[in-house]
Image 1 (spheres, rainbow, N blue to C red):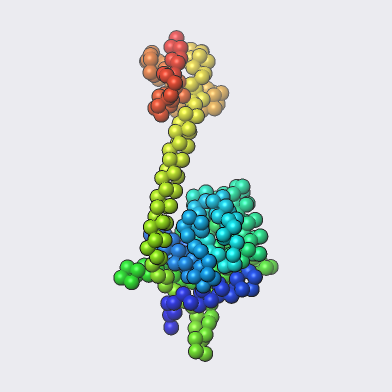
Image 2: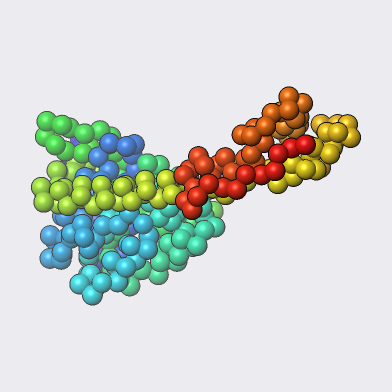
Amino acid sequence: MRWHDLEPLLKWGVGRINKNQNCIIMINGSTGSGKTYGGLNIAERFAKHFGVSFTIKDNLAFVFEDLLNKMELEKNQGKGVPFLFEEVGVTGGGGASREWQSKSNILFNSFIQTARHLNQILIFTCPNFHNLDKGTRELVHCQLITNGINFRTKRCILNPYFLQVNPTTAKIYRKRLRFKVKDIKYKLSQVQTQYPSEDLVKDYEKAKNKFTTKLRQSIHQLKKAGEIKKISKLGDKIKYITEDFEAGVSAKDMAQKYGVSKRAIFKRKKKWKNGLKGEAEIPIEAKSLRKVGFEGGEPPQPPILT
């Protein structure tokens, strides 16, 4: 029999909190598979059980520093307060396998390891379980994998696995939760979350749009800064390159000398042979500054090759 209600999962989480433990739940799935709305509904249900507040403003974060600040709010010090951390390991929030040595990730792991006394519920979403580094994966208690959305009933279908770590081998074992209903034993092989409350969804979409807009702006700024800093290794060596051309130095030797490819040398030599003036002889860094809209006037023109 497949069990669809969240009650067994909620009862398990409540049991951990009542035993003076924390509860860490990871929801994995592709974009648009219902991870966030499923997480919101689970958080709402936990908050209702413990009689605590769950809002987008105070309990949801997209980056680790924001999560940490919200967990330290005085109003969030109660037992069983749930938090939702969106797309962990994807947006630079910490926990990512590729960034496991970063400061954010070290802080993230340290926080998870020391958060037990807070008796809080942490719900994370990310596309893949292996977006997290090994140390973080070992701290997750329950993994929920999205298995589609029932658009007629507005429910997200999740496959639940409860994780145990072998202390000797550090191997992670995925198990099904066993529970009883009227003395009949069941395995929790599937659960379905309901659509979150309308106000919560509206607040989430506003927060998400604000975050993604800010993220896009940051990406554009970084790209622009990268263009400005992209200085050609040949741009400030035109005089010496010209002398080497005149001396008949080989492209191979010049490439090694200036730390560039032979192709770059050949392109520069072609322009030198053709005797091109003006734009052809403007160093690459000057072109880059023009391309991104250099503020403060036109970059100074370099001397024309002779």
